[in-house]
Image (cartoon, rainbow, N blue to C red; front, side):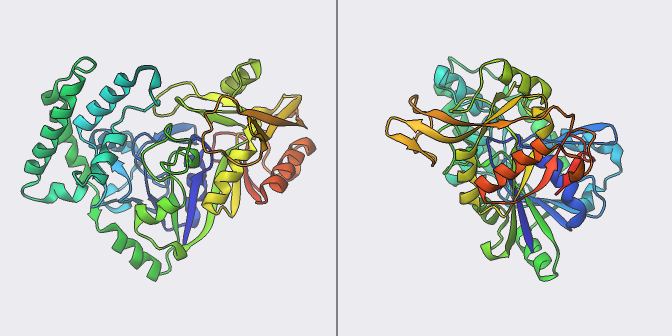
Length: 422
């Protein structure tokens, strides 16, 4: 069986922590999309770890971790990740598998990403500049290079052909980009050896055999549903399918193998980069959320925009993913707010709507609020539902009723121990 775990907002919901917490119940943890634009943060035993490409179950000795075909891999960043884990006694040759069909991010992909974003000026989308978009463009354009290609005798010829195409494209951006490709390529080719430290496999066959053997698989998503290339707040989205459908295409598994769909959301809302955000706060409350919640991108370091919880967007994400149970993160950050606001609908030029409109960037859209009593108690030391304050439990009950989906896990801090099963 396969359970699927994904984010329901604009990313940064805390997926890495929950995967780490749940891994002991699974045999295989499989990343199915995105690339090193992901920043999955895990904290335990006094250490903080940020993973970009490697699945978040890597610290558990009983689980095998797979980077699926839907992921795009930057070998340079991947090598640094492995080096950062070198002191934890992980046997990567056995515990970390890579799909032959996963695409590679080349140095010129990163250059194209930076050049394209710079050329947009004020219209930039907020790219992480990791080369993700150009890599997926080459994938869909049938020009990309996959991990399995580096095992072929003529792979450098294919590499050179693609790079020459990129250089021609970069010539159009001479006014905004300057680069030394030879220096970048030296690091790139050296880092390819790090991929070979892991088992490079036909991942879809591996997963099919695992399912036949009754193995338990957790598919780990990156980014969030509102960044989905089809169903996100286009064009301010990522380049992959971040919704439940992406697990099927990103791993080669059939829809009927998926059982539980675990959706993660924050008790409030954040967003990194550009794009519409109807519940964004520009006042002291927003600043307080950012400070208490340490809202800075794990990959980019950029400050996250903060706002109250948006139930319109959250209901939408639950529906398109078929979410069966919810995990609420960072409830502790809202401690001390006398009143907590929740967006229950949008006021638009066409009246009040309770569904996500085609263009969320419409300046006429305004949030319709419901006020809920807050709580003063510090939740971070609480370990059981019975310890949680009544007003906090009322907030959870209200959300469960509105979302028509049970909240099974409540996180009250960044550490793996600060997790309450409800």
